[in-house]
Every structure is written in C-alpha cells, then in structure tokens.
Amino acid sequence: MTENSNGAKSSFLDRLSPPAQLTILASGVFLFFGLHNFLQEALMNVPGFKFGVMLGYLEVFGVTVCSYLERHFVAKETGRVAPLSAYPLLTCCLMASSSLSNLALNYINFPTKVVFRSCKLIPTMVVASIVHRKVFSPVEYFFAICISVGLVLFAAADWELTPSFHPIGLAFVSLSVCADAILPNAQERLFRLGSSRLEVTFFTNIFTLLAMTCTTILSGDFFGLIEFAKTSEIACIYMAVYTFIAYIAISIHMTVVRRFGGVAAVLVATGRKGMTLVISFIIFPKGFSWFYVVGAILVLGGLLLSSLHKIQQKKRSQMMQPLLDSNNNELHLQEQEPDVESNHPDESKSSQHMASMSIFQAKKHDHQS
Image 1 (cartoon, rainbow, N blue to C red):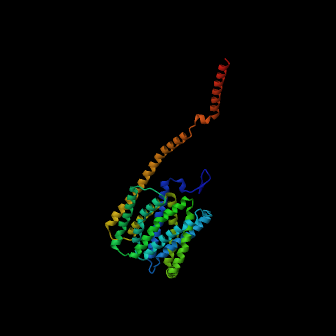
Image 2: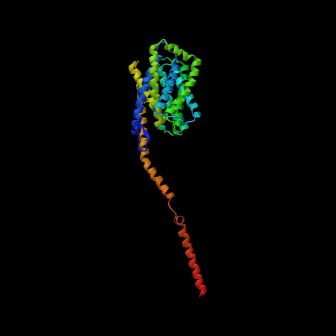
C-alpha cells in the first residue's frame, strides 16, 4: 500500500491501467480456480467419497475464516456499511449456488457440471439489465451466446464418449446457475453502496455457513464427512488445500466484480472454464471429437471479439468525453450569462430618476416662462 497526493491509500493495482488490472486479475482467476477445480475433481475420485455438498461447505467455511482474519488483522476494517437486510438474498444465492452445484457431482460427471455452469453468462447479463438497468447491444449478446455454445460443444464430446449423468443432477446444477446469475449483480449493488470486498465476503459467507451447518447436520453429510476423513489421509490433504485455494480464487473473483462489474467477472469465469476443460483434456487424454475443435473456436473467438468490442467502446467513449464536457461547459456559461439590468439595479434606478427630474425641471421652466 502507498499513499497518493490526497493521503488516501492505494494498492499496487491502482497504479496500473484498467487493462493491466484486468489482465492480472484474470490470470489469478485462471490459476487458482484451475487448481480449485482440479482438487474438486480429485476429491470426487477418491474411493468412497460421496459428500459433494460438503465441498461447498468447505469453501464457505474457509472463506468465512480467512475473510475474518484478513478483515480484522490486515485491512483493519470495523463496522458495516450495508444493512443486514441486504444479506438474506446473497445468503440464499450463495447457498444455492455452492451446495447445489457440488451436490450435483453425486449424480453427474465434472464436465457436465462445467458445461451447465458455463451457461450463466446470458442470465447474468439479463439480471444486470433488470437490476442495474445496464444496456447491452445485440453484438454483446451474440458474443455471449458464442462463448456459451462453444463451451457446451467443447464438453459435449465428454458426454458422447463417457455419458454418465442423472436428471436430478441436471436439475440441481440448473438451479445453481439461476442463483449464480443473481449473485454477482447483488454483490455489485452492495459495492455501489460503499461496502468493501471483505465486508461483503465475510457477512455473506458467515450467514451461509450457519445455514449450511444446520442443513448438513440434518442430512447427515456433516458427520459423515468427519468419519470418512478419519479413514483417508489423502482426502484430508486435498480438503485442506482445497479450502485455502478456494478463498484465494473467490477473493480475486470478487475483486474483478468490484472493479469491473458482474458481467466482466462472468466473462472471465467463462473463459477460465474453457481453460479448465483444455487442461483436463491434456492431462487426462480423451478420445478425439470435432466438438472439441468447434467449441474451442467459438469460445476463444467469442472471448477475443468480446474484448476487442469492449476496448473499441471504451476508446469511443474517451474520444467523445471531451466534446460532451465542452458542450456542458457552454450550456453552463449560457445559464450564468449576466443580465445588465439585473446586475446593476442601482444604476438602472438612478438613470430612471435622472430622466424623471429632467422632465420635471423642463415642465417647471415652461410654467415659469
């Protein structure tokens, strides 16, 4: 942290240009979520591990503890900006998104989950249009469709070669997508109220942790995982690292939401899912399918064109801003242009008085003569 000319603290990212900030944050999202997804799939492949919902619980637990420590001992934050009434919606969305998507892994394979979760870009844009009244062009919706369809085709090859999914799992992951479409926009709304990333992270996750603790105890998954951990050392190691990596990944993701908005965060998340599938294909070789090729072209092409479109829009906005400022200044000056009579009332009244006296003197002189 450094201090700027006004005495306010600024981070390393604040001294970089917005494109450089987004590049660094996106790279962090790609790296840590890639490790997160690898550990998630590794845990589901541990023999006897049937506690998919507890993966979401571990994420929420780790984020709650780490965000509390960072908030109080690093950022030195106290108090709360957003009212408590703003968090029930976030709690419900996070709980549904985390628990349902991980619970679905008990019924569907990992590529199937990734495919369905990748389709949240469009509903996120729709929610942003309704909640924040953001306007997106048909071109932006076209790019979003290309990215989503590309991911679907890329992972559809796994469906074709190793089809193993259950309708209940599809229902769970579909509901988690709907919750995920609301979550980043609800977070963005609190950021606009002045809430910090750590505040939103801690309070959202502490309430979600309390709710998930009750539900997992009632379902038996909570104590079932404890008993399973006693019998598998490798599972304990995976879960410990998984919890730590999850906090780093989620923290970087929320920083993207705060600095660039919910839609940008989902674009980055959609791209890193494509990367996750590519790395999974390289590390664990699969049968060849042209769906991989077509899907990769659509995903990478959609991301590239979407980025170029946003850069072009930003440059156009920057070029138009001086002209708009000039027009606003002219209008402001016209509104403040002085009126001669109104600015010199005494002078106006004095002239009228002198004119009246002259007429009176003239009449008096005529009368005397």
